[in-house]
Length: 386
Image (cartoon, rainbow, N blue to C red; front, side):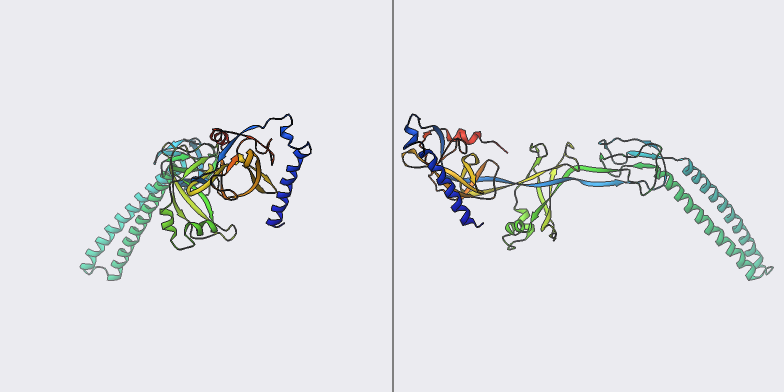
């Protein structure tokens, strides 16, 4: 149904409401019924301080996957879920018995290789003396030199194996590469683990990242249809607020730091990242909330949401006219709202007086009321805060 047809239907319904009281007789309010005293508000222009909320997920500044670099059985788990650990602190211990044995074997192999080098060196030195006295041939001497080089190569290989064995032994202690908070710990002592095993995730939460999305339209609006760069648009954006999952506001303000240069063709949105300080570690990876971005709309006509009612998706207010009689008036409002007030874009003018009490309950089109002076502010303050 077209918008104009909806408006006609709405006005017709409102007009039908005017006929109801007339069924009771002419001037039904005056027949034993006193005009109700209701709060009203004079509409004026003011700067509207608004906040737009964007659902977000929180992620640590650096979430590190903790995996062992060797295979073996866990002999000790030193950490618990949610625990804060310092860089270099031992988190898990893998069985060392076979690893220590490998180190001992590698050290023995080095000793054997070193002895072979010493023997080969002695033979090569003796053959050099014999060669100088023409007692042996040059090929015979070269054979001893080749044996020495082979012995040295074996020694190098043995030393490399020893370094590897010692390194593997050091890997038996899984330490924290960064300071942060320990995530889920699913593996207990006695479990066989390997380099493919994810032991836990260590979240560095000194700063927390809030990830959310801007639509293509929102990006075009903030860049004035591409007339300025995204970088300059980000630099001009005000500090943002984090609304936690329990409805409370986080005590530290954040800053938008990046907007993805690629728009997802499926969602039509680009990822946005805001950074919030997290000195006490209260925020954790995986938390959810809303990023609230403030904006100011100058010279806006604002009315409490409690002053409106809806018919067929159209919003109406009761405007106070002559003889204190109210008239149902259709209005249009801006999409952006703070959850408590509306910004009126058409239907009202500065200086109009609207009813802000009893709307949608006991106020009817054409009703005569007694305006309550000084009650507008209290009525607006009583509106539920989202």
